Length: 448
Image 1 (cartoon, rainbow, N blue to C red):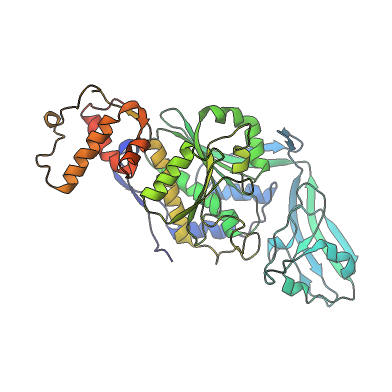
Image 2: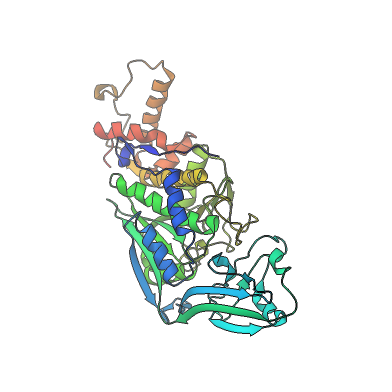
């Protein structure tokens, strides 16, 4: 278990030069988690809106509504689904699959039903997972009208074969709208970074709530800090249809302005950090994320781009091919509890979730630092001594390293070589150059 922490950033360069307490601790993450956990969310409906309202307490979200029937690329915004109650009464009088006990019990987007039937008639509408007999599976039927219940295989095996079952689902499927929200932190320069996460699953911890909580707390950290060079756009959407809808309206602008982007998902389990490449594989988003993970000594894994994932496959679809990767811990489908009721509070660690927030902030900080710097003296080496930048003695190792780092920075401050390449040439973190950048700016040796 990671220790309980409150994050403090030591910021220099474009992030300022002061130490400020900004980041939340694990207890605050847990409190928001507990409020979001019981809400029955789907790709539309009041559960989604209520969840956005709670996240809107962390950062000032702007919410949008797309009406049912709106064409978005090759898709159409579906009807809005809401549910109030659901259960099954078995012949012996027991009530099972009650929505209020666990909202995974009902197939998402189930149409209303109130009928009596035999187990044989009910069985096609029951979903179990034999490989995990104690788990309730997560099933959806967004684009085909149907209804169903999910239960553990253990409970299914107790159902009597004879007698009458009463089935009740109090839901509505009607014209309405699909909700999504965003928070934009304008930058002082050109270029935009996208942080995208989905908010459309019912009560699951790692696969659902860890991504939105990471995004919201990262945004709050940046919001409370000094102005940033890049614009940061945080997007909270229903998975797949939300990304497609956003691209339908903003895709061309993103093609022109997006510097890098990341999908946040599965951020809170106890596995190592995982970075999933963009479709381009060597985009700036990929290079910076991997630089931070390697140079800051985080235990991590990498995985190539593949379509069997989340919304990165929309952002990286061939017509857009945006530089969007994904930041995770154990990826979806690679942990046994995925899409089941066992993806719960016990599965995740708020300490590990806080570390994912820390890593994401470092990646965004690196993106802001990274650019080609331009030295004011391009012919010959600047005389550092008369500017007070040459150490009186080169014997201490730290002073010698700082001097070499500054000279290295100035040598590659040619307006074409970015800081990432400069740092990689010395096999070290680009964050080590922040103090040199500040000193050279003060001395008039760097003009940007």
